[in-house]
Amino acid sequence: MEKLRTDRRGYLGPFPNYSQPEEVGIFSLTQDGFFSDGRNLKYYVEPADRQHVHLDLNHGFPQKLVDWNDEGGDLDHILKWIVEAQRVNPSLLSGVDFVTLRGHLSKVTCTPYKRGWKLAVTKFNGTWYISHVHEQWHENRQGNYWGHKMEQYLTADKARGEPNTDAMVDLNEAFYTVVTSRLNAHSLLFSAEVDARLPDDTLPPPARYVEIKTNKTPCTQNEERNFYRKLQTCWVQSYLVGVPEIVFGFRDNKGVVRSVESFRTRDIPGKVEYGSDWKASVCMNFCDNFLSFVKRCATEDDARVVYLFQPDAQGVTCEVHRGRGSPHTFLPDWYIAAVCR
View 1 (tube, rainbow, N blue to C red):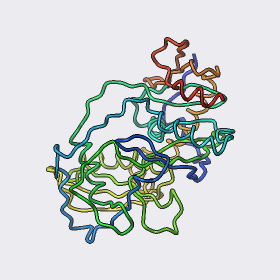
View 2: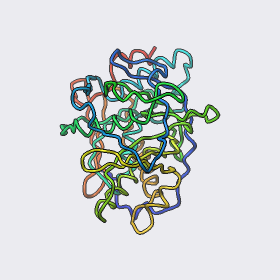
View 3: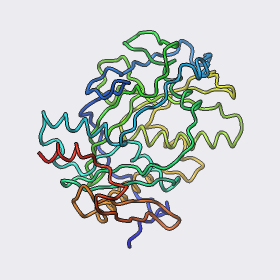
């Protein structure tokens, strides 16, 4: 069977055409479930002095941590949004090639430099749905808390409000944008979690959104290399959804953020390509080729047929699983019934 090569030298061509992502919807997740609105959208709060902050990411841990409790499939939330949105716009999926999550596209896009994923694809009503294959992994509860606590320190519930740093850090609370875009011949519809928005109402979404990260302050050459690798991944995440700014909180070994710095998404390739073999064009060219590969392999239009894609040393492989008994089927019955009406 055909394999898709992953050797980065094969993707050194010009940067492919990627259209500016357009927001077509939003939704929020809470302890009470899914809501097609922006109730969990936070506003970014600029620190008074970026070079001199003291943000203890351990504050409240673990007493104020509320762990994830969602047991649904990874696409369930965007599928719920699609079902609701189709009541207003029945032709929503007309011409859409792929429905997925930003996180899955990010994994694929980084493949020439970083592997370790397994994705499931089903073609249904002319659209390819990309999900992940659940595998056991070690959960870093403190790391999860640190990331969300950083967001809490730099966000408020209303424009020009004050952060509530004594609130619970609830991993179930989130706000998502749903965007459409096009990568060469492939039309995409996907959701992405949004950390915060700028208070400037003149900026349209997703240009008003901000990504918030934390990282140990690089003190050695190796730590600096690791940070640039993380910056590469952050570029992919933000570029795919059209988020123009990434705010980093730089912390010490004890989890106390001492400084805050912003990176413009468009400037990151110039920062990290110098002196390294990483190229943004290689990432996007691979993603384009992977989507073409999916179209060639996943040809049966059937909600109960699943194609599994995974990279190995020689390239990305594809294997097919058919039938109701397959453990890899992921499109829920309620979605199939709703879309088939």
